[in-house]
Amino acid sequence: MAVYKEEQTGTWRVIYRYTDWTGERKQTQKRGFKTKRDAQAWEREQQNKATSNLDMTFASFVEQYTADMQTRLKENTWATKEHIIRSKLLPYFGKLKMCNITAQQIITWQNEMLNYKDGNGKPYSPVYLKTVHNQLSAIFNHAVRYYNLRENPCKKAGSMGKKKNREMLFWTKAEYLKFAEAMMDKPLSYYTFEMLYWCGIREGELLALTPADFDFEKCTVSISKSYQRLNGQDLITTPKTEKSNRVITMPQFLADEIQDYLKMLYDVGENDRMFTVTKSYLHREMDRGAKEAGVKRIRIHDIRHSAVSLLIDMGFSATAIADRVGHESIDITYNYAHLFPSKQAEMADKLNMERGV
Picture 1 (tube, rainbow, N blue to C red):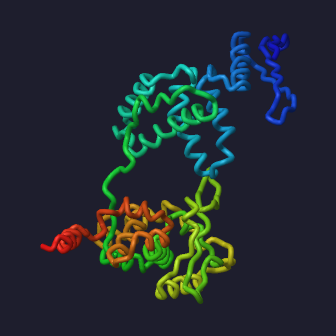
Picture 2: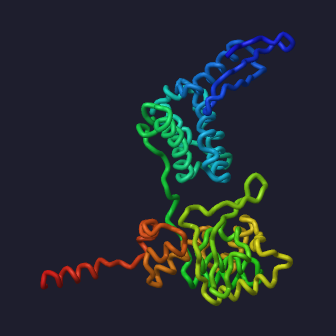
Picture 3: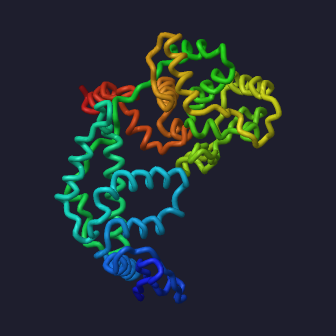
């Protein structure tokens, strides 16, 4: 590397030569440093990154983390991570040396996050705090696993927030039917919520559906993609998990309803999206329908919980329900355990019989 002063501008330039991962020698440069010290500091950071020396700053390591991880993740997943890193982590840790960040500094940052209030006096939700902390911990875990950082200071500091915000909400079948009746004045809204409830699909899975996904002879719908709106662009990705790729058998009445809906659409091709509503539209319709039907207002995602609770009430096993909604059966058992009928009395009776009482 070399540092030069450019006489015309009075600023400093760094020429940086390095060997890339293929063994090829390359050269890059950076101009516009106001002082020689700034130029030399940047030069040291490049040397640290080149040798994976964790004497580099947190901000420099984030560049390395980005290079390692961005192409491995879905675009919308990375966008969420990048926003947290840029707005919640870099302002606090950016200039600190990776190898010197302590558990005490993590705790101080956690307290700032816990005490934050927006303009309306509202704090961050416990789930958001957990998500932000997990991202910081993921960066340090990456440094431990691949760049020889001795330990993750987040483990010593402990976590913050919690995994779930509140008790799971859901509608009974009777509540949903009241809501659905209120939706009938807008066919688009009605058919949208019918798919969400009777199939238990995710919002993004619904918004990605095309006519080609339906087989009306077999009464099935194939879930193989998910829709997101990211940076003003429509984005179709693979579903949330590998288990989410599935074929759902629809009840006959729903298959008939969706065929009626398709007849209403004008000039929609086999591979065009059928439900072109926005997520904000669905939220507004949820507000309207819940108010008109006189049922509690739940989140759009809670319709999925409602679908699962109906299947549990009908007596289906966790494994069968998991296959339908694209979950692992252990997740169904864990998340919905309180809804499954208690087997305690039956167990006690059988234990009595075993003992001969």
